[in-house]
Image (tube, rainbow, N blue to C red; front, side, top):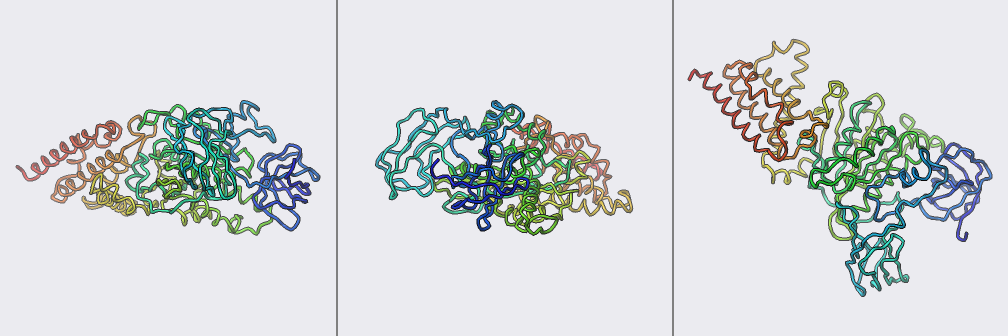
Length: 590
């Protein structure tokens, strides 16, 4: 085989292999190691020695075994067929592997990431003789019922389009168009490779201004994230990180979901793989799998592939962003990724920093989250990537390095609370410890829906903050010792928690809450607070308010009124106002 770089193994230290004789090899080039041709990546060059990170089980590998490299960086194959696919961390198709190998992945197995025989119906969008450049759309394919796949002239290619095929069915290996460039003719296909560690180019990055609507009330109303933004979900074991990400993946308004199971338990990924094909997107009536790409690198798979899996996922996300799509990346969890980084760095002999993590942990995290954003693409339309990373701090300690570094690079922080989770209050996102920096970025979008959104949101947050302060006093003197106005504040705060913040993912109505319904529910609770506080201050007993039938019904509105029938909440609010007005008349003795 001409053009191959050949070397020999001189040392094996777990997944880290040292090889000599690799003259001409570069950093991050792919290498195939040993008789099984195990996939690896050159991660360090020390004189004549190349250090290779092997992404497969290298049991039996020994000094003297051959190492081969084509001089190509670790890349993913990007083209039609990614949607609905399930890959491991280095983009091997797990369904195809299961059909060929059964339950366990054979060493050295190599399958194409995309189906090379499937014919896609191409619709040409350019004509011969046209001047094209990087980003020019020359054709499109209906990849799924939900996703239109655009064939785009790749980065670095410009010139005259000398030929393009007619409409019809073609495979990813067929030449679709030819461009006469300054360097000679370029033959364009539907699919091509891109290095996973290199961000794809864009025209310009923009400030995000549209919210990622998730259907989760505590997120959308209290701690929203913009499309193109970054968020972290830190929480200890059992607080619901994975379930929260599942809910976001199922119901958020992104066009495409890239779900990365990075070092998590196999049964959790199994839940995703079995649920998504059966779940229907309420907005379009189609299966959720038709807009999803999954990367499963579970805890029993090789550690090095876990380290690269997040780059594989975000590169696929950038590919669809460049077509003008909105993409949400769910990384579960970046702590497991950081642990893989720590293990590999220790084998490399790197100087450990805090808690044994390598000193470049913060840099790697920043590089990952930096690939999010709203951009003007090379093809013209805007596209965006939203990155939501789960963090699993040991013992729920948010002061550990991964959580601390992540909080520096994200603008949205959804802290999960163990006490809330133990009380079966889900999502267990703490309204005290969480924050968002996107309120003013997306304010105009919400104002188009309701000009009072930010006022209503801040009023509810203030009630919860006052409740948190009063709870400290209750522990000391008991609730009965507080003034009646403060007792009423405690009651309304509990109503906000139970009737608004708590949400049931298994309830057919409550699993997804539209922005319109969210606002109306919260306004109803604030009406009770404002009108009720006037009555309490005037001397009315709190029980006269709380024991009214309509007030007790408030907690059930979220699960009884569908998103399309929010006028029923308006009718309820009118009835509540009348009931509170009757209490005022009773108080005045009318």
